[in-house]
Image 1 (cartoon, helix red, strand yellow):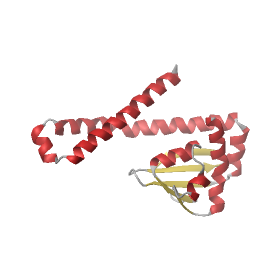
Image 2: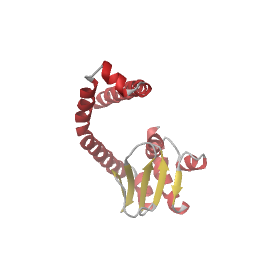
Image 3: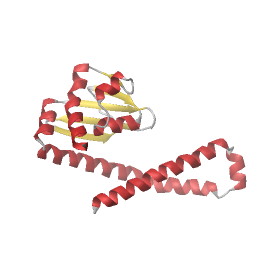
Amino acid sequence: MVLEEIDKIVGMFNDLIKESAAVLETLKKEEMGNILEKEPELLGRFFDIGEGMGDLPKMMKDGIDLINESMEVLARRYDELERALSDAEELGINFELSDVPLGLYLEIKEGKISIGLGELKEPTLKIKAEMPMTIKLLTGELDGMEAFMSEKIAIEGSAGEAVKILPVQAFMKKLRG
């Protein structure tokens, strides 16, 4: 039941993103003065969108909290993940997202993994990538080594530290099926 609801929401969200992108492209092609002259109520709609986005930070935080809770459950349930996290010892990665004005980090500490918004003060590594690549890295859909070698991502920091995350990625890939 919950999975069906999530799938429905993901589908609606993806449709919204596609439709929004199309509308934004149309707006970019036209001069805003001309558009507002023809449709003055459009400005009010922009404010409506802005108001609706007020809930976005809380939704993002709640989503990240669910991801972190899920990772704790997985680490307790799967020895392979628990071992990978333990072997990684301490690792802090700041993700510098080139396509969105948002900071994201991943931290492994004391056998636990967490992600969050913002930046770690003293990261072990910095990974520069676009948001879609970052999501693929975090979910195991994209292998970190392959992404680095094909220049889909850039890494600042020690290669020895960077490989610590690979067993976690391998587990996530295996979990995805």
